[in-house]
Amino acid sequence: MIPPPIVQRGLFTLDRSLFKKTVSVMALRIPANLTMECKKAIGTDMLLEPKIRNVIDSDDGEKSKRLVLLNLDIKDKDLEGASEGTKNFIKEKGIDVTEAQFNVAYDHWTADEVLRAILPEDLVDEAPSSFTTVGHIAHMNLRDEYLPWKNLIGEIILDKNPNLRTVVNKMDSIDTTFRFFKMEVLAGEDDMIAEVRESGCKFKFDFSNVYWNSRLHTEHERLVKMFKPTDAVCDVMAGVGPFAMPAAKKGCLVYANDLNPVSYKCMLENKSLNKLDKNLVIYNLDGREFIRKAVADLEASGYKGAPPSVPGTKKNHGKGAKKEDTPAVAAPTPAPAPVVLEENSNRLKTFDHFVMNLPATAIEFLDAFRGLFKGREEHIPEPKVQLPMIHCHCFSKSEQPEVDVRERVEAVMGGKLELDSVKLHWVRKVAPNKDMYCISFRLPAEIAFASDVKRKLEPAMESASDAVDPLTAESDEKRQKTE
Ligand SMILES: C[S@@+](CC[C@H](N)C(=O)[O-])C[C@H]1O[C@@H](n2cnc3c(N)ncnc32)[C@H](O)[C@@H]1O
Image (cartoon, rainbow, N blue to C red):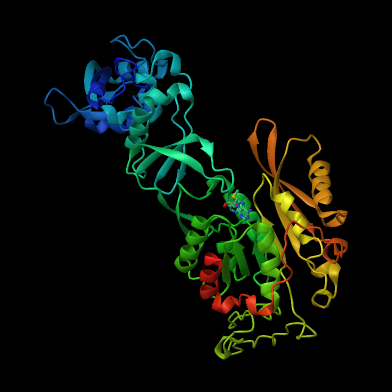
């Protein structure tokens, strides 16, 4: 590595011109036609620095000659530090060893190298050059001791990452309900509207007012992969839709909700952006209330399940489906099998999956499932198979997370889970002794049909006239928003 020039440490403003430097190295003056052979013979004794050419024109005006620059460890004409192979090659070919110079500037060094050159000596070891990217925004988490240099650090990060336009620092406070961080712009444009692609969907959102975590993309993909295109999915704490949009794109009928009005608005925009007008319904409610309302609304829409997709079919969700949306059994060879919904096609169907990603408190919302299907028994004729799967995110510090999480879930739901349906998936470490998990389990019939409902909710079931029809969702969304 070419060491950066010695500049005055601790300056609060960035003077890029201080990084101009002339570097002297030893070099071999060779006939141009020997270049390849020479490079092969001397290998790593050649200068191997990013962005620096190691074969340059000879400085003696001879067009047929080249200079091959040697690495910085080779200090003099005796070639001390060079390999025996290099020394033998030079001797054998009678090559002239000389000195050469080239110029480097600020652009040559990485953000980490620049920071190490200019921060005070005692802050160099952990110089903060790492960040998370959200669209054009670099998102840093600077420790207190680096804050006096925050703008200088931001400028360097911006300089060294041409894809970025904004560098922000996460401040101490997190919005406890909506889980977004207060942020301060360190360098670049004050533009917090991020555009991100994940799982084949576009997301546009105001990063300063909603929750987004790119580190969760594997978890988003994992759950969406689990859903069949014919499934109905209910995302209770959907954020800006990283589970909901890809699931809808896959073909699922998705009801998605977030209490944060900004997330709700972003979801509406992302729904259009991803052309998901038919099968994504969006709400702006508290999660507990939403769970009940979504089930009632789906029921009121007359949903009987989506037909399995076969070549030449279009999806048809809910009672408002138009005639031309019915399966087109046209043409393909061999002719597709006729689509059979269920033996009893009058039977209504409910959600196949609930997703609850609010790890700090989602378990507390599970009481909403107690007695949720009481009175709806006829919709779920084979409870063991047909009751929904619940995927609930949570944290655990326990050495036996399987037991810890399951017992907390059972305590809130007031009943035992069916062990053969329970799976605890480790998502990520969030602190040295705290991990994030997702517990997946089938809603037990004993809880789903319980008659001793003790929920934090007040109102009884909504009437059918309050229900959202997925096909007329937009106007209903407006109504939800104003409620
Ligand atoms: C950890 S974020 C997860 C968002 C999204 N599912 C994801 O994976 O990115 C939790 C979300 O829950 C929302 N939230 C918080 N309290 C809520 C509540 N009582 N009801 C519904 N949503 C809530 C927050 O606004 C936030 O968007």
